[in-house]
Image (cartoon, rainbow, N blue to C red; front, side, top):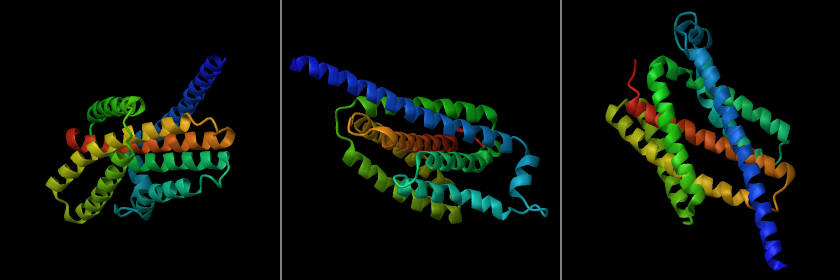
Amino acid sequence: MNEILDQNHEGYTRELTRDFFKSVYAYMVLALAVSGGIAYYVGSSQDIFSSYFRNADGSISMFFYIVLFSPLVLSLIIQSAYRRLSLPMLTLLYIAYSVLMGLMLSVVFLAYSPQAIAITFFASAGAFGGMAVLGYTTQTDLTKFGSLLYMAFFGMFIAMIVNWFVGSGMLDFIISIAGVFIFTGLTAYWMQKLKNTAEDSMLQGVERQKLALMGGMMLYILFINLFLSLLRLIGGRD
């Protein structure tokens, strides 16, 4: 009898986990589709890009700087307030975040060739997928590993700010290399974390959907940053 109950519970947990990850990946793909479509539309033409981000005299408009920094601000708001927000409002903010990211990423289509972007996208997808599987299947606790990676990410972020003013090609290369290792490692860490969340049968209803959205958002952010790190390494500017 106990064996039957255990089997039923295991089957129920597998079903919960499968449904949770379907939602996670649906949210991730939604953000990638929105961001990718907008980035391509705005960045595929100098005229369209200029209409959004340049003043009449050719200088960079204030809107460009708003778009540059607003995704970070909005992501912090979403992550800090998602428990208090309704699911529709959270979804709306998530889509707004994806739109802003698409506008910000439009510069990629001006700086790199479509071939380089496509090759880097598939390389990023392969690396991301491999680390996602590793994080899901490994029995090793990645909590301490994740903490170290976040410390490394903070150091990399400071280095990026410094290089904004310095403009060192070598420092940019080092930052890109570090980014590849950090974001692939964090992918494994977050997949394990999401798996543990998915297997928690106490999480139900709206709370579970909110966590699926937050998981999709985190995987989306990791994928985009991995893509950008690889693009700086292997893309080659136009």
